[in-house]
Length: 320
DNA sequence: AACCCCGACAACCGCGGTTCT
DNA sequence: CAGAACCGCGGTTGTCGGGGT
Image (tube, rainbow, N blue to C red; front, side, top):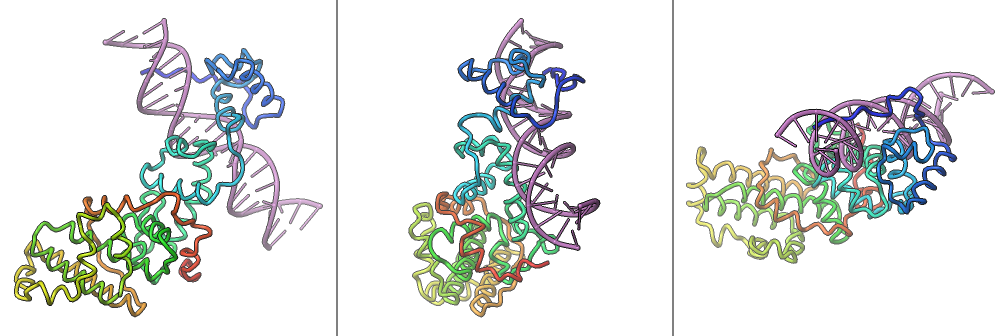
């Protein structure tokens, strides 16, 4: 694989901002050729421009192209960028293909100057879209669980998009997500039972409406969340206490999951009293994480700027 | 009025990948 | 098949304008 010497190294090739005259020359030249540039390398000479081909290409693709949409990004575009970035990372060119009339450079700039900062203010890592560790976070939400786990921001966005949820409902959504991760991280049936009991306790204590949302998602069918949420007092009815205690002893595969389930219960309880304590570190379970992902309907995602969810977060939560 | 700081965005630079010879 | 030529991408820098002091 070779690499050509860059014509931009030529001492007499102009750099810096383009003038109107140069823009006009470039546009006319390309239009004269019916929009077919051919070789960018040869274009400057053919067009009579004292610029390097690369500079011409950039000027055309990022600014002069007739199909470029100018102006501010809409809320919908912003949502789309965030969602795509969560899945694609810094693949600006790929992201740009999903936003008509926007260039990769424009999106990249918008990300770095607007979205990235917003996410940081909310304590969300703009690279991983995960909650920043304490100390690196720019805020101290009392509802720590909102953004304590992988995909938390998107989850919150998705939840908000499904209705006018308050932050409490979003915290419940997060708790449920955690529960799913706990269940998914454990292969033992007895651990699952323990976690189901925990789920029941959690849902009872929070009076969650989240399961109703989940029931509508086809992707969740295999998990049958309705079973979780509609069965009252699951532990008492279905789980022999002895089995729970026997199978969740320290050292067993179920123990860690049971412990996490316990933490969930604690969180759910304190949650009900609006005093949410951070819970432990969770290992994301790919299977259930995958189940949750399809919930996001892109056009409905909330805006970081204008949606009520972000406004609902107490202002002092952002302060350092 | 002058200076400084900062945000926004255009433009540059270097590299990797693909195509051409 | 190797190397040159070229394109496109992503990170970074430069420039400019507005606001604050």
